[in-house]
Image 1 (cartoon, rainbow, N blue to C red):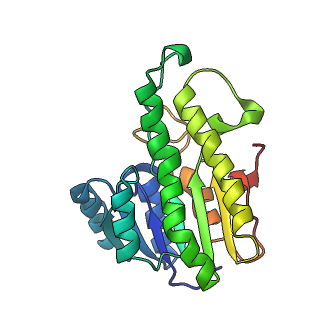
Image 2 (image 1 turned 30 degrees about the vertical axis):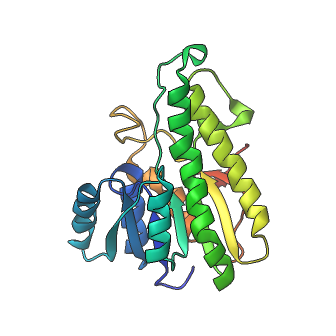
Image 3 (image 1 turned 135 degrees about the vertical axis):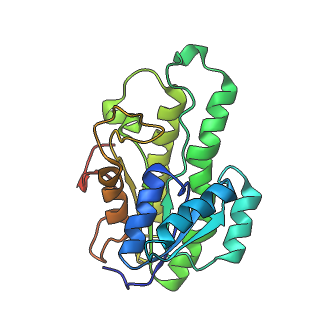
Length: 231
């Protein structure tokens, strides 16, 4: 396990899997920066965790806005653990060849470019300090090994996020920074819906495991339930 007081940033941390990741990381003794696009909602979520005695601070973060990411990087450069959780699913039920280009652009803006911006802002500092963990919330819908139909924008964004994971893991190899992705499964959240089989605690578990890997842990992998799965 890493030292008990690492600083973790979780994007999209005010609800769902992101909020549970914040809770679990803080319960392990980490300082958690709960990133939220809407500051009022972020502060309400952070306050609910502080009421449990957890070290959680809300920070304004819109991953689709480069200036927002840059401001946070200047204000809080000490991030040791980055959880790329912010994501959108805008094309559910839409046929791929009838997809509006704007939906594809907006999906990539958050799910791929948002993660890239955060990595570009914080991973160099991790490498310079000699320790870091990046855990990106991906999806089985992005697996080329099991690619199906529908949800083109979401699938493309997660496939690209998986590629980003592999490339960055190689980029920082040997500098004690581990970069991985997690498929949380179908989880009962606002995005997953009330009929999803997995509770949010289970959905967050592998993400938190990747965010706190020991020195001999894996890098450059895609995991579900703490086990590697095909790309």
